[in-house]
Image 1: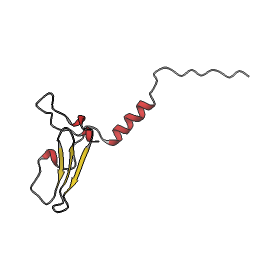
Image 2: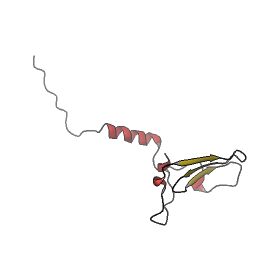
Image 3: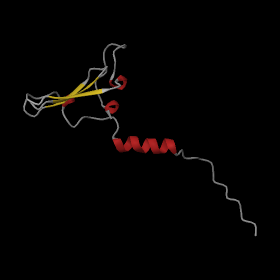
Image 4: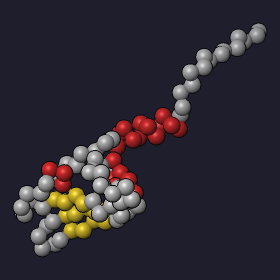
Length: 95
């Protein structure tokens, strides 16, 4: 789901994007309760801490997604079972 995040596009063409992240690093501060999820290459972070100052709109939960899990599941099923546009031919049974 990380790659489905709708995030800002980097200004530099060579800069890593969210889709380039191969790991999501999750850290919880047990003292403050802050939770952060950050991409290992893009550096994009989503954070949640109800006891601190307000986060930017892009960092608030729930996160904005390009596609939801059920949409990705439906795409995976349709790719596994492609629909054929060819008509089905049924051969008559000979007695």
